[in-house]
Image 1 (cartoon, rainbow, N blue to C red):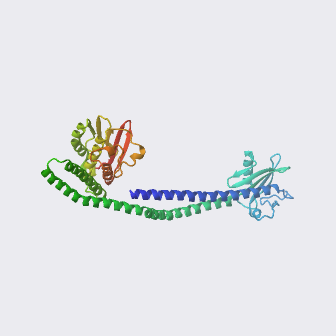
Image 2: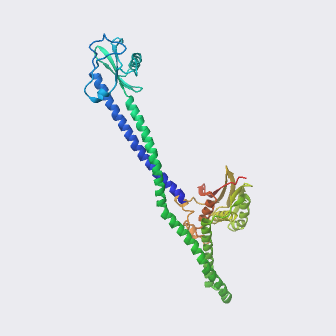
Image 3: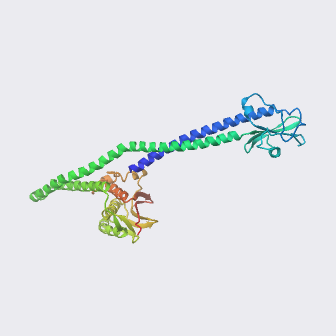
Length: 409
């Protein structure tokens, strides 16, 4: 139980941290990328607006000695521009490779024709920003190399992921430590409560036995006596309560010896004593048992589990005619369902049915030996056997369903 609580606490802390770190890193990355990209667009627009052709176009060769305009802004001087100029009738007029061999003249011309064919005056093309401008006598297609920005963004992402992963690993161990510290007082309190129940049960056994012995002696002398009958009745109820308390403590604190059991045979045998009890209350006890379902468990506890569920169904059958016990195989689990007619149990009450001393308002008026411990014992037995138990309400039926793993031979 507390292990699950620790896992939930760690999961909640880690989820929150991932959301916070992820949101922070994403914001930093997007903001940085957008800011640098916008600055590059500003630089490209300045370049286009202030561009003029070289004074002489007669010296065009493979080196393209250009006299393009640069302002005195350091960012502009550090930027790499490629320029392709066409005449109005789409004839190539001028190419500037910026004396960089990343793109040759033919590649730049092809790039310029591709972006011109797109019909957009600006945009991105691979790792280049481009803008097309009508300069009056010619068409200018200018490119700004955005490789540095993209590489920087990639580097930022890589370092962010590495830093984030290392940080999350460290925070995971911190979260585990904090979860243990948070749960530890609750676990200690729970252990003390369990120990108190066990100790109190053992301590109460002696005075109850003494009272019972004295009542028997007095009843022999006084014969029929109303007050002695009342004492004996309440003493028997106290004895039953102590027995259940000790059963609960034993189930929770002691791991019983396990063996391979024919669960189908066990359930069938445990139903027999309840047929008479059901008949006395106007009910039929019917069964649908899949044979030869074997589990690895403790026979005493599993018999107690079946008895508790059947007794609970008979006691709380609401104007029904029968109580059904169904045992079937679903994948690698043996599913035991005990079904009775009854009003739907509200969702908030279903979560508390398996808590100690919890009884619905209707159950509190019962005069039987019911103290709200039976289902708590059933849950403890199922958990000891690495299984699960739940209650389902559907179409006027209340079903208690226990799930145990089938033993594989």
